[in-house]
Figure 1: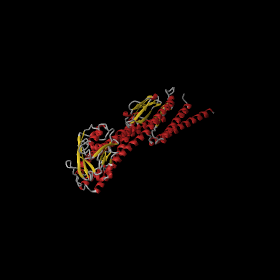
Figure 2: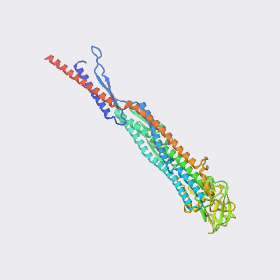
Figure 3: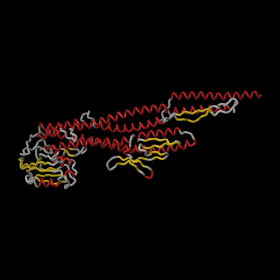
Figure 4: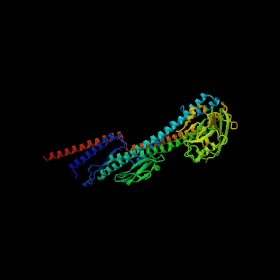
Length: 572
């Protein structure tokens, strides 16, 4: 039907379309800074024409719907790269904190402290009887122990801090999964009449993007507004309107086990399949990165402890012992020494060591004790006590599963020499350090209490002579600075440099990777924004365009009204 009524009908639809256009543009402008919002636009269509004597006659405009500007391909790529970026950021934060802990460019770095320690042995060699040099050596040793202890403690604290971050991340993952499932249900209900729930879809996509920052996920559009979200290994986090949770616990091996909790109480350990997202970065930092450097630091401490102790245990101080007790205990006195739980039991070899006895400062007796790795502590005690030369003057016993040796008379004293078996160092007899790792490294208490027992000299293995000014053992200990004492043939300083260099290179490489993905994410963000972001300039143009369209439609109403009046005037 054509006529004046048709003109009014066209005008009414035009007014509605223009008004809706203004409303949509206004909504875009108001949400210009809303996270996750995709700009919307009104879809205008030509109304189906009517048949007339002159052919199909248009009936104006109609609103086909409101469309959101959204590119699923670019968004999926952005979520994927954001996932990798989040993992790299978490790893880089861990590495940067470790790098600051082992910063050798500042004063009092590990290398400086080590150099001062070796230098103190050289100073003692210059004046073996000097009490000042002995006190200075003890202070440098304490500084060295504290340096190892502090770094070991900080590594443990960093690991604990990462553990404490895992629970909040899992809570966020579970909350986002539940939100995505809830929004999917709202979307399907809203779109049941064929309309599109644009705002709800924006909220769901924002939740998916936030989820991708926390854990590696993949999204699949099923249809009818339904989206399934799975982990990278295929296990579902969101399946339609159902959400599944993640949990974790600490295993007996002190590692994190991340669990996927499925229907019917099903649980699956997915730790080894985690990739991407902050969660993967935290778990890798806790169970791979930090333990690696803890092991390297502990190995460094072990090699230094044993090197110093093996050399010191064969020396003699300004006086002999009246009694001596080992620092390390065996699990059982009847167990083979190389399998008795000694920290350095694996370093015991077939060999021997000497015990020299003095009476009132004059050499009295000496004897050689033969050692095999499989002998027991009971065997060792028996070998000392039954030795024909020294058995009458010293008594060996077991005190708290440790070797203890006492001089039988107050006028007698004893010392050690020529240990080719590493037994004394393995049992902690006449050793300078105690402990077997960075955290437990300490100066042997009897050294701190009696600095004159610091073994700067050596006993003549044939005559038992030991001069007060003898500095041979101090020189040998100072020479350990340049000795290859690690398993891979490095000095302690070289091993430290290797660890610091490795940490620096890994930090630098991770930083480069993070910057690469940061640039990629920014590029994809710009591409997404070119499609989905609100442009204020464009919206201002649209507002003017729809305003003018509204004014023109209103003019149509005026024209139609005037035409009616003209007709009514003719009837009069």
